[in-house]
Image (cartoon, rainbow, N blue to C red; front, side, top):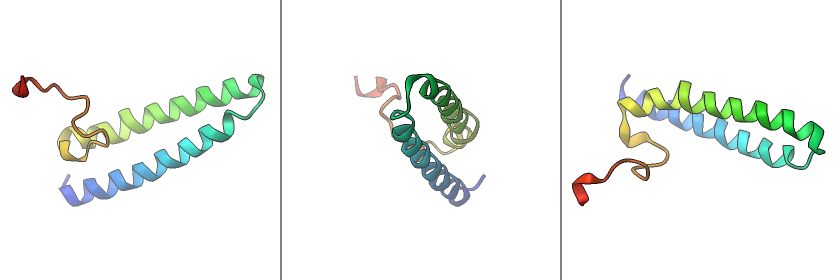
Length: 78
């Protein structure tokens, strides 16, 4: 995938992530018996967003990682 297309996808995925975060805030106001089921579903969607959509792009275009280099090994700096 070319870098321009990858950037567009990651921008779209960022919007999806922001919408899911907004839903999280609303879900947390629900009574516990309703909240649990919704949080599980939301967590599953967030997992799919990262593992199925974002991660394949990031593997090819590391500079598009939304976490930057925060979680990458820094052995070359040690």
